[in-house]
Each structure stands twice: as C-alpha cells, then as structure tokens.
Amino acid sequence: MLLKFQVEVLSSEQKVWALYLSIGNIKSAIRNNPSFHCWVTIGYIPFIKFLNAGHLNGDLQARLFHQSLRVILATLISTGRKGLIMHDAAGAKRSCHPRVAVILAKYTDQLIVNVARLGHSPTSTATREQLGGAHPQPPRTYQWIMAQLAK
Image (spheres, rainbow, N blue to C red):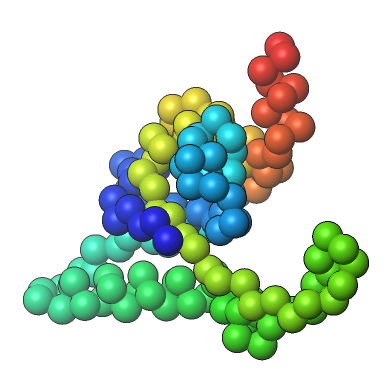
C-alpha cells in the first residue's frame, strides 16, 4: 500500500485528497510507472477547514477523512472479509479475499497518471471552465484519451 498525504487544490476553494486503486499482483516496477496506467482514480476526499473548531479542527479533519474512506471503500472491504468466488486461469473456482491498496496522490501526479492538462479534471472530461459546474461531464476513459492524443 502506498499512501501520499498531500492536499491538492482544484480551485481557490476546493481542496481534496485523491484516492487511487490498483491491483496488487502487478509488479511494483510496472505499477509505479505512470506510463503503464495501473492506477484508477476512484474518488476524492474533501479537505475542509472547520470554522470555529479551534483545537478540534485536526480531529474533525481526521474523522472526515476516515469516514470518507469507509464510504468509498465499503464494497471492497466487505468483499475482502466475506470473500468472492472467482475462476483461476485453469477454470477452477477459488474463494478470493481481495486486499485494499490505496494511493493518495497530489493533483499533478493525477494529471500524469490520467494524461490530463493542468487545471482539467483527471477523472472526467471536464475542462477548467466546466469544473464545479451543475452538469457532470463524461468519465475520462482510455478510448477518450487515445482519441484526444490522435488529434
């Protein structure tokens, strides 16, 4: 598991931690090379400075961070505990208990991993002007990235 606890600034008022997911059985030399695209952004955890919290601000931020992790990773955690029947390469059924590995990366690393421009969303096709808009933009997919690179 690789964690980077760096706060990212999406705009003047939006600060977040990005949450990435990868498969653990990929060799680390490949998984940690951004050009292989082995990490997927699965969510953002808000970084909020609580008003009038005083010395409790740090505790409230930590609680929000961990509660957000619980919500985002709930399905993966329950699957890891209960197990999941999967077929191996030979076709045999096996009870698998996947482990959760998470990376929290800074915004510039997200842009590199997802082939996005500075100021644009690393997880959707939203441009700088569309970020925070009322209408969600389509997700940034491999096919979309390849089409943009071909232009």
